[in-house]
Image (cartoon, rainbow, N blue to C red; front, side, top):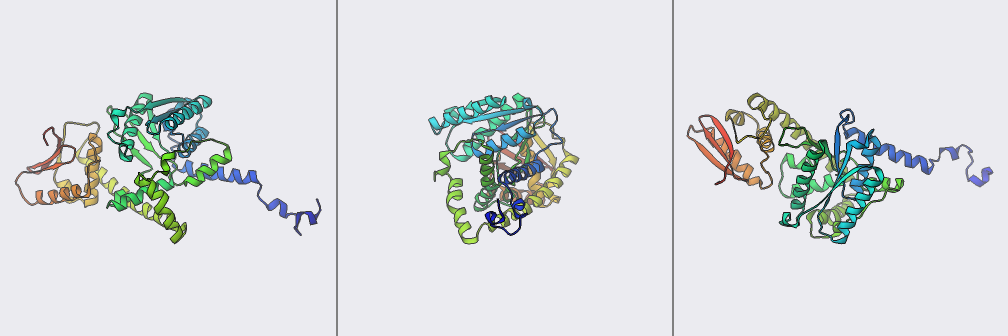
Length: 365
């Protein structure tokens, strides 16, 4: 080929143009790097991870990234939850995940949700049911982690959903990278989300590069779910108004809220370590009232959250009003020697007597 044929006066220019394969390699290297920053590589020795796989782009990318780092596929297990809400499409998703696991030599457990479990088809109900099955499967497989495919866009959507509900710093800190899950026998178990810094479009582009198939969930286009309307209607409007730059700025706010929450959580854990051995759930919890009086409210809130998580008490019914009532209760209890009592969601009662506060789940509250 002559210099005229290349359209360049410099023969070396051809070598400076990135080839398609080098661009693909760069994308893979970027995703690997982002994943490795958040995946417990140094801890992942002779321990099992349970991967939640729906068949969509998020979970298929997560499974592929984990397998590329796994020395032993026997330490990777898959759970698929078939909610049965989309008829044949749900069954096809299930078959796709099972076939994928068979091809890769991965043990897969597929759970069909009992219709009796579905009090409603709300996002919150479906999330709660999946979580129950994740924990049960993790315990059965003796898994150390439950890996989920949440990504950067999920984090942004969660921020806005919680913002509009009036959440405080913890809610606005977004989806946690890692979260401990209380177990009935005290075994360590964590939920981990190693793709929170990667966007959905990046994941889908990478899957296309690698020729990895995935399933499209038609319900993602329906306007009956708040998250879908946020994703499909509100966020595109923000893009048109502010460009893509606003996403980076909101993620910086999320990081700031995360740092604040982590600081409060560390202080709460330090205080609790001095007063409570929280190995397993007990009938009730008694602690000095002084630890709730002396701490900053954000720290006090983290103390309460730690108690609820350890006791396996649900936080789902809590609203901002419940937190405000509890804050007022602590303030009043510190000013009078008389016994005090407050009823909290989930049939939990808090009682103060002689400088001690007791939290107890009752049947008549």
